[in-house]
Image (cartoon, rainbow, N blue to C red; front, side, top):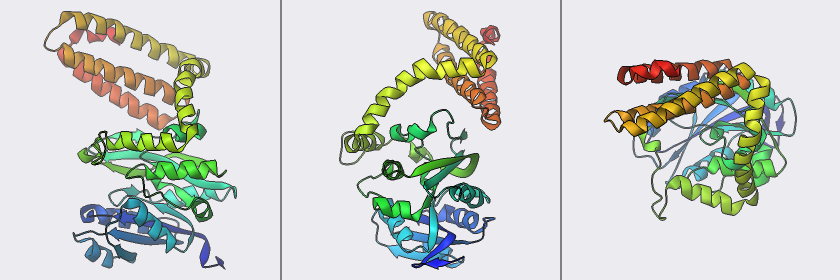
Length: 340
């Protein structure tokens, strides 16, 4: 390992910004320390916590820094500025890295000098049970319409790419990672994916959309409006994507896996037909049945996409979800057996 201007080549800095997340911090730190790739350092930036964060950090071999509360963008920018690695990743203080996260992402990163970031799939846990994998069909463009939101913050990033755009924008109270990677992409850096759920993303009930304190809109919508105003490309891609989905996505489904397409399409058709009957019945249970029908249609679309992309993990996940929905439906609507 060579040292160049204070930066260690092939060295990875894991930056953990935190604010009053001491109850989860041990798991995050231990997952960062237990990576199979050992040329790493772990940096915790405490953004003004008032809990036991400081004492927790002192019990681990990590670099600990405290600052007055300035927001997540500021905490990450500071942590990266004091890091020694040629590459870095930021992770949530309540999240967990699989032990081979750094090893697998770094292997992809080192394959080409123009790769600026490498991201992975994720498994959501906590109050949400779900699996996310990058979409193979059009993942290169999905960043411009927010297709990686929620996971991209854990990307392995080349520090020169970070420096080329000036770091994270503190004007974003959320989605700062999406804004950052849009700027990195527009600078000409390439993004690559590892199609495995190597990041464990904890979801809380507080993750639900909430209102921005200074604007009459949700925080999510505020950040999307900010992205739209900042990048003209985002507005164009967001308009193009629905057309793409209607014209080409179904064509890909049909040509790449016709049996899966026709099976899924026929089941969705039968569900829609039964939905019309249920709406006319106006029974007390009709609302719940319609909700389950809607969930089933969405899961069938996801399953079709997973089959086309040949993602066995996602296929099994969506099949399991479908079985759970079917069980609920059969309990309140025995005639549902005809939809299967």
